[in-house]
Image (cartoon, rainbow, N blue to C red; front, side, top):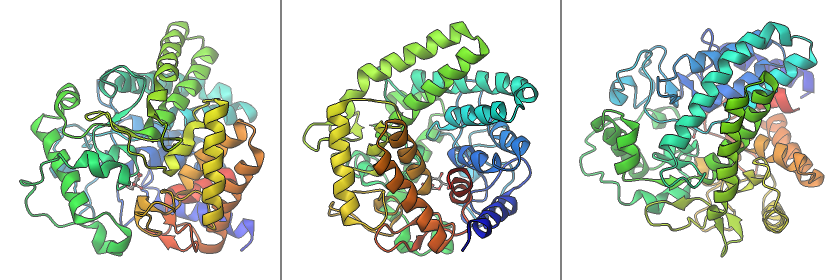
Length: 423
Ligand code: GLC
């Protein structure tokens, strides 16, 4: 397929999944607005429709709560094709939303949109929109500081595996054991009605997801209460790196807008993260790893999120060298980087969701970080592999790192968007 054909195909997917101001990740499996999906989708729209790109992010932030929290799903309209739907979340908000968040990539995306507006001499027309988004972005970042970092370590503590965006990563297995699933009750999953169960999380994982949702409902979605008593609290390496990066981009915007007070506040958040993030370095594995806040134990899993240290701008020569050694080792075991789990891990499964498959959005962040850090050959490999997967197999949710076959839903919005933004 030629680049032009792929461009046309990718734009057609975004257009078909556009519900008017927001885009669904996939019409059948994910029929609502998802938080970090929309941010990446905006990068795709920005390659041909700037106004629509900004609108995607603005629509998402229209669902922000008063305390700055930005939900992981916005149920702009109901759809029976997904479980758990709005009535299960019962957050009582308008619009109806879920009660957990997702990786904060939005500030980095907004900075990209802004840079692209400047390059096209369109910044005057977007300045007010930037001002308004800036206020919402900083409110969300403050929310992370106030509710998702109880020990003030400068990390992000996920209260639900879905918050990490890497739903069934093995990092959540042991920390998930204390979750009481005895009262979850009967329910019918919809995901396995659309897709092969082999590609999806297990029943035990789903029981835990639902038990945590029920816990949030019982707390009236009061985030202070959840932070205090949640049975699952994991400092996620992915979200921690992503928020650090997002704060650097937000600082850039604050300086640009002359927001001195906010800039000082963001600098403080960056300093806390830079001082505290080493807590997530696993000396035994020589890798960045998620860590259970309740037990203090490192997960010991090397996942694709471990490689986001470059994207976070953590220039530490010894740790960088260790991560590059892992990248080369993993790269010699699989055809396509970056598998979501180390292929030498006994739990590696090439098509099961976040236990093996390659995700284009994660690769985009890894590749961007490597390029910025000057690791050109590694950056080129990650980008090349990502684009090759799409050229050979179309725009799937994820792909097998072994043979490149598509995994999960097809015609996937954020995959198409990454093609447009990164090719
Ligand atoms: C799955 C993914 C998550 C994504 C969502 C919608 O839950 O794990 O990262 O945001 O699907 O695509």
